[in-house]
Amino acid sequence: QVQLVESGGGLVQPGGSLRLSCAASGSFFRLNVMGWYRRAPRKQRELVAAITSGGSTNYADSVKGRFTISRDIAKNTVYLQMNSLKPEDTAVYYCHYSGYWGQGTQVTVSS
Image 1 (cartoon, rainbow, N blue to C red):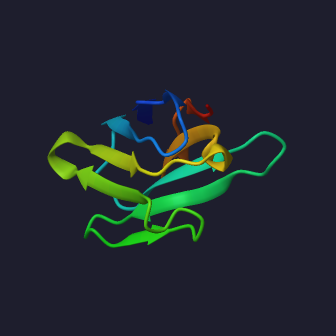
Image 2: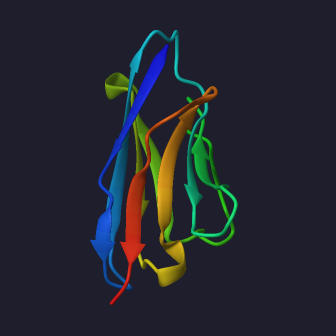
């Protein structure tokens, strides 16, 4: 069993920044690929960013240059730094690892 707990969501104005965190706990040998997904209203869930244990990253085209995923292996935590936020970034953001999902954290970008 793996538990993933997200934090850091909230309401921010366009152009602002937020940092999401996802802390993993439970039984696992080593965290491999961890990712952030999001689900906007009336849209399907989509991959936002992912990072491997070696530090390789992958981003959705819509967030490249604005979002940065990182991880602290010692703390079993993955982060998503979101800058230059746009209204279309509004969604529930979920942390994912090996089939496990966090509960989600709401990000709302609005003036």
